[in-house]
Length: 280
Image (tube, rainbow, N blue to C red; front, side, top):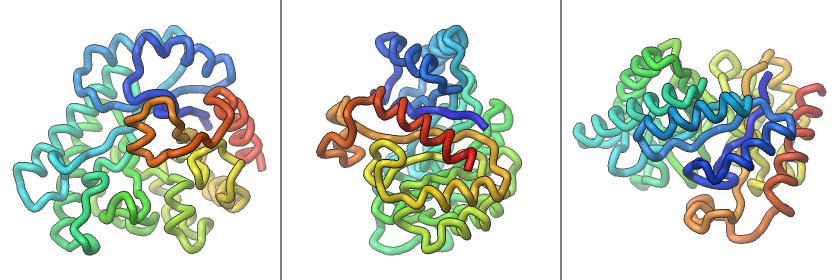
């Protein structure tokens, strides 16, 4: 298994200014970092990848889709834009050397119709993801499709929904991610959710109920780690936490008060917590 830290704790765009942070993350004992990919120019990512190689950090990546490039839009042109944005994101992943691309790029984040997904929306999502998966294979990147809670999306809101989606896509480069924050809201039985989706899970986000230091809230960590060990999961465990470092990011993630002492405290304590949980 590998332990990572999502850089959204600090920024939505990793630059040279964050190299001291990256070096400290490596010193703490992390195997890698998760990079937000919102700027879709591969050039700066290629440069960043070389620096991360020098530091000794592996990487995964995260992105989202919005209303303007929604892969399940009734407008075919918007769906096409969603696939194209996913493809360009994958090319940035390839440039930076990211192993996996995770996130809710199956549909637009925060976009709602006032009802659950229709059969057409599910089909459009599957078709869009098939095209995305074909490009992921060319780029050497694994897709980790993420389900979110009902307040952030409506297409995929449970492990069962997402497993059905992955099976419909039916491509070796398309699997799913399990996020403890969203599961804490949506799943009735965490262990059963993990078991049922087990063969499809390629990535895990370790995220507390209030997005603070893992282990400091009320997520049922004992059950979560136990079930992940039971299915033999040995991939990435990545902390996803949010703070107040960037006002725009804090607003997007709905963080209105400080949840921890400082970012490095969270990183240090969170890594120790993950390692204990994985050992049982």
